[in-house]
Image (cartoon, rainbow, N blue to C red; front, side, top):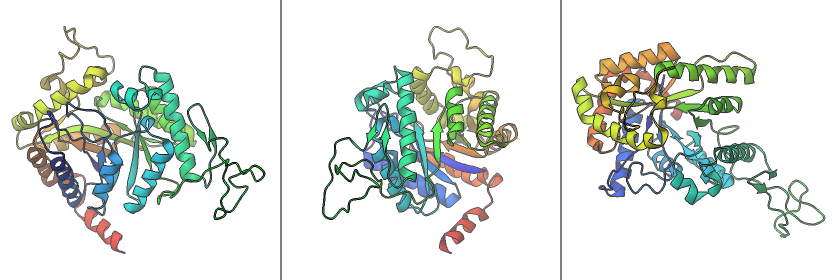
Length: 393
């Protein structure tokens, strides 16, 4: 089983110097690499003066961590590609792939906060979901073209490359019908350099919730990341992905293949300490997120929310814990991960403990206890040593 860390750091109230947060992320990355984790994932969020998410550029964070590590894979959960110029994005990813010796995993998403889209790319406005999705789909199409073709041309709803009417005539740039009109000297195609080290390109991962997004990702050779749902609800979503992927490939894909699950985790010596040290932080973060998302994703199939005065009144630790939280003793967490394996054939699990207002040292206590008493149940201690030996051959 692969383990990744969802490094969605917060600085609630903006009380820490930003350099301290960066140093904490570096400490985390080196700790989990030494313990044998497989990957670390950073998020992209903007304009968050409240401090619930503090990393606006996941690629830059991955670049910093790439220079300080040698084995751990570097992911983004996710790059909000609807905010990016797709060609600039693929260049940055390709450079990172070379800098990290091919350790990049590319997470992509459509966005969740209206204030981000409205100020970064109005075409990505979440009030028009259909337009946002068309922009997302065209961006992904362009990304794949740019990574895999020597020269590309594209004319779509949102992007046109090469820009019509651009005349190119330079003595040190030999003319070629490969990319230009030989009579008019107009550029018709452009080339993206460098191409990624991984061929044909790094693995794409899409953050998904809806059935349509799950099916679209499966049919477009994209792995998926899921977060909140209960095991019963996840099973239906895992089956949707498996069935759509099997149909696309024309062969049976095992349940769980191509899927990573994010779980909120706090590992402690007893159940009470897990709640005491991490409970308030995760509830605070979920109230932030669920203001937009609601609580429907937390329900079992057919279940209805209790009738409450406020839409988030049901969001308590006691209501949430049995649904999707890995908060508790090492023994409890081992049992719950084994349940995910047996019910979902889960092959990739992302965890995090850096919730709002949880000090870095406290989060690291959770991670270190997990490393000592949970991880050995799922990963051989020889894995890290074998990987290091392979890197030196």
